Length: 453
Image (cartoon, helix red, strand yellow):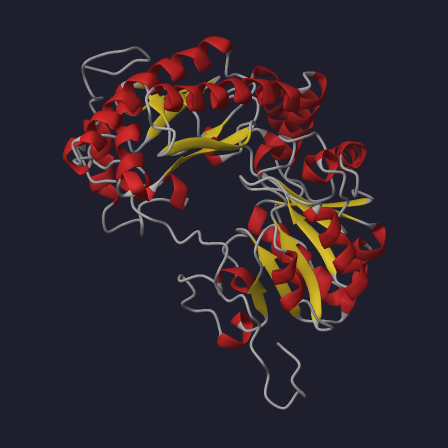
């Protein structure tokens, strides 16, 4: 029986999903183009694997099952699927063309809109993915400072300079790996341990799920300025959600460079590098950063419509309001059910994370059981709440009702010390997304009088 967003006794029929999965086996490495969308991040045997369409805050899989979606395409959907204002803008532009032999007016118009919204956007350049603009920002910082070393904190994409830090670093030369190391969020001492006269830039996600403490971002900016290193904000998640101008607007800390994607165009592929003209002007003739599809007009039309809608509807305030209701409601349920020591909902209300304590069992098994029971009740969830403007009051209340049932089952499984026994499929697998406690100290380069590399 096809699932729908209701309390029902059946897990969804996913036979068509499994047929596609079988066809992809041996054809598409890791099955997915995005790790977070792949089968390792959902209970394999219960969760759908392929989605066919979306509308508002809901999606339908290839078997016809309907779900409330809290992943929002892993971030890009900020207004809701198939938003009429955005789709109409795309259709209008499609009538005129997609990509042209010269520049398009939308390149200027969207850049002006970003300049009006983002504090540091004295200049703007477009690309297609977040990894491209974070890599461009690092290259620009190296060119501007004449230095090579990078300090980072957070996740910044798949390019060599960053991914060399992770366990998935095969194919990245050791010399590239040696130029980058990490620091701990909210820990200025770890920044100072790595910051030296060879550091070109400090790049970080200004907030993931932990709020900055003790003026951390302000102090970090001061440290960078004192050291002659550029401060770069990776605002893939915070951009246009925490505030229209992103985390730099929300926390009142203006970085030298900032990188945006995800929520900017409601699902269309677009990214932006913004920054002070003093640095950005090097992109005129000194630093090479060009790409064929950077000025593709459908995505720019979508961005113009999306950003205008977020501005006109005061989108960040709405996301925070709905998210706060969901976050507070989850934590009240955990308190009521006696699970407060084992699970909490944390983060900024616009994007929250449900955590599970190892004291109750394997956190991945705990997460898998909750995911499984939410999917049964028509809620697509992978541990996060990425909200969009289409999430209604009724959606939030329904989700909390689904959580009540899922957490009640979780409580029983924990009491029986048998969480794995409740799972009807393969549990969620770990990912490498470790962003701290590795490569913290820079390597020392022989013969450089003790200076670090």
